[in-house]
Image 1 (cartoon, rainbow, N blue to C red):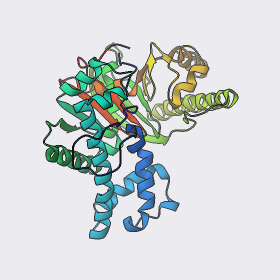
Image 2 (tube, rainbow, N blue to C red):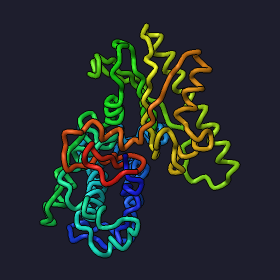
Image 3 (spheres, rainbow, N blue to C red):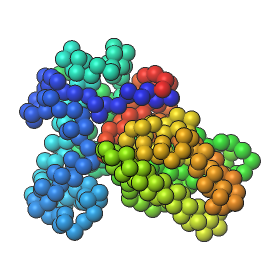
Length: 355
């Protein structure tokens, strides 16, 4: 189980590592300098140079348009795209250097980590990057700039691995939690409820082996703001999020059954929040769901029973746990998801500590 203080979002760069990066990053947290939202802000600021009509596009789709700019026939557009990737590649490199070095100043700025956590990051061999921003060609460029900074610093680098089909790493990792039973050929629904998008799929199993996984259209995440201060507003948003959560599952069941498939009763959900035995922690945008039921997995089962008149049971996973599950062969490694915030997952056998 994932350690609840594993997040690198709270890493404070109290002291810049010795490197070639000249950006003024000292005093900022990892989340202050790297996220999808910050990418989007930079893309909007550079929209003219990138030849992007940002005002007419859905904000969350802008990183995809940055990919197009990166591969443009216009050298000026490509240069503008590379400027953004260099900016964030260097920032990611600084974060990783801070984790690798574990300087006294940076250790003091992270009091919830002890020697065990810092020694873990220092001894790691590989960083597996997953998530939308780690997909090619963006991920390849980020990896290039990270490696440039490490090389110039003279420090022993992490081996940076770009996860295969990294946008859907969470969905594929979820398949390792599917149970082996006699209902071979049925469709196991798998969801990845992220901060930006809800990714949907179903797997066809042959015993415990995945015969096929079919990716369905993703949908925008809604009602996942995490800075709600008013308890009454939070309660209302929790109810809205819960309705959207249930409707997404319901709509997907109808969609897959419309293809002539039988739905297996076991549904696996990856969620951008800490979970334990079906209970959702009071953290992040999905933390509001704790207000709906003490055990949200059991609650989902009862709701689907009421809607469909048959039994379903749910496995809820932290998104970091789900994405890392597909990399069990990678030793001395950690998965880092590049998205709305940093997600961290430990391949089986490579965890810091239990939850």
